[in-house]
Image (cartoon, rainbow, N blue to C red):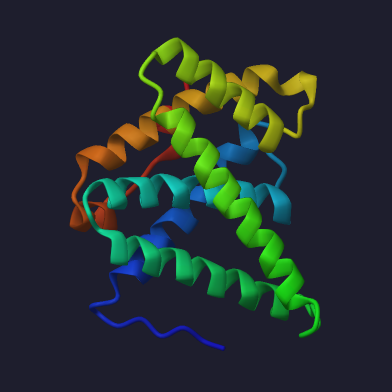
Length: 176
């Protein structure tokens, strides 16, 4: 299966931007995020969830749903390219869906918190559990990742959809 982009298929370009951002080498060089399928999946989810939040806050519900649908099609295709059998795909996709929607619900709840200290602590705990697999050696990396996420979310909020499509993101700018 090959996805063909059309000029009016904004969701392809936006999803591609988040995919590129999630694969930025700084995540693997500066922080101990695993350059594995699971590690890349976690980073992709975080970026897509932030984009979806931004789009839904601007009443771009259809566009955000198109991005989610494309992400699931892309993951399905990846499983097939890895040789996962047709009978196993639905089970794997169900698990991916549960993870995505669980992560989305949790991140939305945390990012809606008004008190910054609490938000920061909750995000740090979230990343410690999910991105750093609760390994105590990486608690500081989890804290730094919070700075990145809050900075990236703030940046997305300041950009129009067109600007997001054209923007050249630099992940390392957001790490402190």
